Image (cartoon, rainbow, N blue to C red; front, side, top):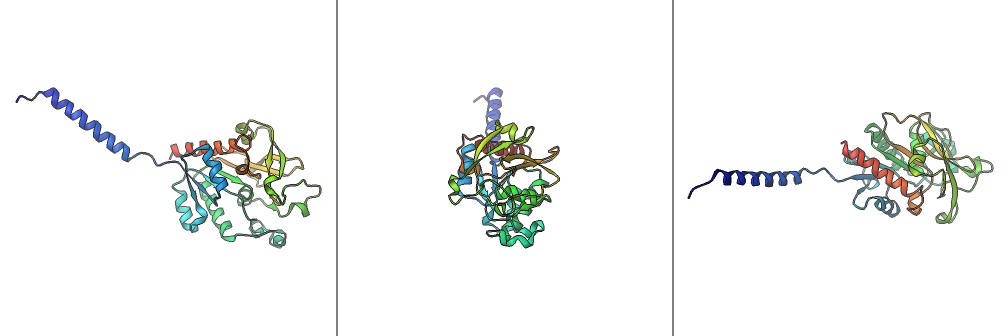
Length: 262
């Protein structure tokens, strides 16, 4: 039987296509993964409203050394709310009596995770405790107890924390305002501490009516990772609120940019 050169060529083309398809499927880029310093169902649901297929890793469930290694595989870090930061971390050990509880292991792990994320220029979002931890890690301090230290302060914490709200006002020319698309909004609040002395590397991006710091970001973001902290709880708010859904969406967007370039 006579063999035609054209037939042999087509066989080679088909074989090459099959080989390429097989190997390209094997070397697909890893899926988007976000590290959470301590996860709860609220945080998981909030992020997945912005991206239903993103992989989320709860770093609280592993040792500090393992958490730092896992962070290498991630594209963003979410520092969540929780216990008070131990005052000794910002030079106020004598104020421990004003606090409601500590998790020293968590403090140590999260300071290390934040420093590594910043070194990697990885996107970081801090919520409530996470916002405060960013300031302390970069050289700032906290007001240990708002009711006893700030005269005429508004209500920032209620017994029924799910129904505790106040307005925040976004600063002009802030990164937060640029993607939130509003100048003020009502937020869910639950904190008795706040930023005291602000880190010299940060600026305020949101304030409450009584003048307390409600959010922070880089003064000069040039050459640095995305870094944002908010004092309220967007994960407990409706996605339609501009200071909830926009934060989750921006975290995903920044993680995708980091993922694409790494």
